[in-house]
Each structure stands twice: as C-alpha cells, then as structure tokens.
Length: 471
Ligand SMILES: *Cc1c(COP(=O)(O)O)cnc(C)c1O
Image (tube, rainbow, N blue to C red; front, top):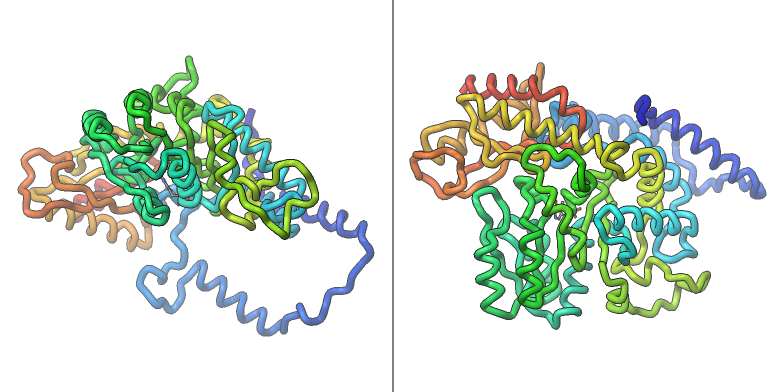
C-alpha cells in the first residue's frame, strides 16, 4: 500500500492551520512587545543562518566550506545520517509548537499517550510484548539506563561486550562504576562465542551485552547462541539494537530473507532482558529519539524517586517515573506516532520495504566491489553497511589509498561522493599477502540506509572505480 512521498511543507501547513483553529478557541492574546525582534536584524541573521547551513561561507575549517553534507542525496553514502521522513518532520514541527514535555502526564497528555502506544508497538516488533519501556534522547542514554538496571539486578558484577560494540558501553560502565571487559570479535565483526564462554566460565560476569548491528560493520552478534551461554552462567543479557533493531521486522517465519541476513539472531532478541533501539536511525525520525525496553516490568522499581513537582494530575504511571531523564520532548513521540500510522512496522508494508531496499543496495555494492580488481569487501554485509579496502601492496598503502579516495570523492564538485572511514586492525584486512608495515589501516565504509541508495548503486560503484583508478 503505497502512494506518493508526502510533501512536508504542505502537510505542515495543514497541521499548523489546525493548531491555529485550536488556539482560536481561547480568548485572543496580543503578542507581547518584549518578544518582538528588529526586522533588519532578523533579516541579516537569517541570511547568515542560511549561508552557514548551505554554504559556501568563509569557512573556519575546510569542512565547513560546503555547508552541510547532502545527507538527503544517495551520493551521501558515508555515516548513519539521513533526514527524517517528511511525515516525521511535519509532525515534529507541529508538536514542537505545543512543546509538550513527556516527563509527566501534566506536561503533555496526548503526546504521553502516543509515547505509550509507540513503545508498545516497538516492543512487540522486538518480540517483547508487555515490556516496560520509554523513549530517550538517544541510544547512549538508553544503554546507560539498561546498564544501570543491569547493575542493580546483578549486584554490580562485570559487564561484557564484544570488541566491536559501541564505545558507549565502556564509557557508561565507567559512569556507573561497574567493571567492563571486552570479548574478542571474529573476522566478520561478531562476538567470538568461544571467547565468551571462556570468560563466562572464569566467573564474576553479571551482564552480557550483545549487538544487533554494530556501528562499524553492521555485524550481528550470534544472539541466539550467546543467550544460552549467558544463561548457563547466570548472566543477564542486554541487546544493543540501536542500529539494527528495526531489521527484526524482516526476521519473521516465512519472510524471505536477503542473503546472509542473520534472521535467527534477530529472532532471539525476544529472549533478552533489555533492548535498546534508536528510532532516529532506521525509524525515519529526527535526532533525539532512542528507546529502551525491559522484559520484566518489575525492574521499574530501580527508577523509584520522589518528585515534589510532578505526577499530581493522574494516578497512572507517569513516564518520568520510569525514565532517567526528566524533561523529554513530546514532539519526538508525536513524530514517531504519526510516522508509524502511515509506515507501519511490517515486513511487507511501511518500514519493511524501506529496510529491504538498503539491504539489497548493500549486497549489490558488495558484489560489484568483489568483482572489481580495485577493492576487497571486508565482510559480506549482514545488514546495510558495506566496508571495503582499496587493493594495495601494504597496510600503509591501504590506509593512504582510503584517505585519498575519501578526500577526492568529497572534493569533486561536479559529481561528489561522500564516504566514511573506518579503522581496522591489519589482521582483519581482507587482502592476503599484504606487507605488514602498520598495525591498522583506515578503510572505506558506506552506510546504505536510504532506500534511494538502491537504484544509485551502479553509479556509486562506477564512481568508486574511477576514484580508485585515478590514484
Ligand atoms: C548509534 C549507536 C549507539 C549510540 O546511540 P546514540 O543514539 O548515537 O546515542 C549505541 N549503540 C549502537 C550499536 C549504535 O549504532
């Protein structure tokens, strides 16, 4: 069930008209002069603002010269960055005008209710119906909350995560005063189960963090195999699905899975104690939208606090009572709610086909690079991230070629290409017989998370080939 991509400006006009109508039901108030601004000052400031966002400006740094990178365009095939869906933009900007606060029900009853509904929908998608959860400022805060609850539930015992896990975990364990250790990752960037088992057997482990889609390679830890190991040693399991969680939509029984898609690992997210998911990554949302879920709602007791200011309007559970942050944007819940009404969490409708397009783009790009003589793919993509090394004689030469292609792509004004770089240990480079003149090299990385990447891949591969051959 699809149709044209909605126009954010038209939708926003309709939504703001509706708010005008609502405001008109109150006694009119004149604008206060103290909020007025000098028109000439506004004019100049707006010009400067536009120039900063879109460039070219007199740059403080070379990177600022162009203004923003064109995240909307498929030629931006670098980091995990893309604009929100137009429906999310319009919904956010509408709720922003009300500026509800989802801390307590008094801060925004409608957007708090929307938050409860989207959290229930996301929990069901993850296989955790009935989970306790809420939106957060992002994956980092969501992981902090999951690790805080893990600390309380395990008496502060050690947290393990793979060497390729997000840096958040080590940092937040530091914040929480909990010991943190890494477990080796295999050549494909997934947690090594033998290493995990050996470390569990040595004792003292309270929590195992598994990653469903690493930030670097998009690799998925073998969650279905790691959970039984953790359980056998009495450890709690947290799944960091900040990047990859939405892919669980495609792991249903009978759903046709793209090549190399680890459906079993995604299905096993249902057996975790806690899960983190970032709607501001694959959920088409603006930044400021992460989420955390707990399989056992009773862990809400670890959030217990007393607030002399809030929670008076209703005896229902206020979201602020189960969240570490106090004020949170109701607009984030509103944007996600409206988005999921029109792009539902389904394999065959809404989000599913969008995720599939990125995965198919990644497989297509990996196949083209593998077939070329100029690049070697680091690992077959499990999700929608492709990491690839320019073919060269030595580790240092790989590093230099990556940096050269990265810079040349970006600075080609006629047909620019935006990539990202990723540092990889020399023994993980996919080039046999490479001279080992350094311990690590930068390689190239493309996150193909926009469906627009799918038809763009032939051009992307051709541009990469041209940039590599110009060296
Ligand atoms: C992005 C990411 C995070 C951090 O989330 P933020 O929303 O950037 O705070 C944590 N873990 C993984 C796997 C991620 O991809």
